[in-house]
Length: 217
Image (tube, rainbow, N blue to C red; front, side, top):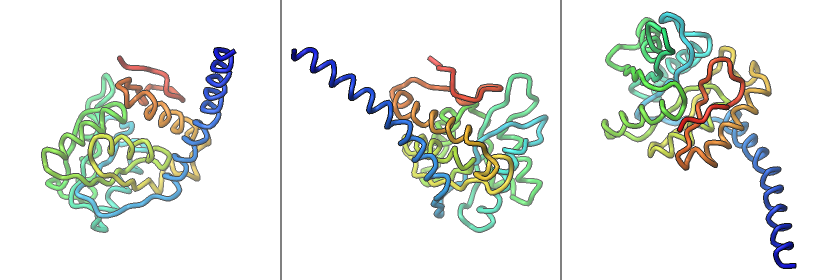
């Protein structure tokens, strides 16, 4: 009898967690997107997105526009662009971002391009390592609204203090995004806090993928 009661209770707990966890993840992603908190920081980081032959795509350009806006407002003294290139690319997301910022009035000396990372965690580890070498710890992450929660969580786990300034233009604003983006990010956030922190890295940068599907050993 005890074994059966234990099995029933275990199954009940699993079912409850399975029902509650997705709702929790969605609420966390939604709250971070709708209620961003931005304060002065040591550095502004632009997370990478697609570029074509050095020209930022719409999503990346929107992030660069937002980074320039908060830089001009004095929220951070320097900008880091981060992101590698896809196979066959002539340049990288970080390099194209730096070039865009330079041609839009940001001094080159104020911009660092870190040409690493094809997913959020790898990119986060790369810029966090640079920040630690500079002995700075506060970052404003510029990315899409629904991406803010996961990006900030990863940054905090790397030992930096983060806030997020979500894009206000482009295809990935809250008003322009579909519910699929919210659900995808909620799923990616849930995967990260459950297994990603335990060393199982999950790629979120898969060509043509709508959901996180690839586990990197």
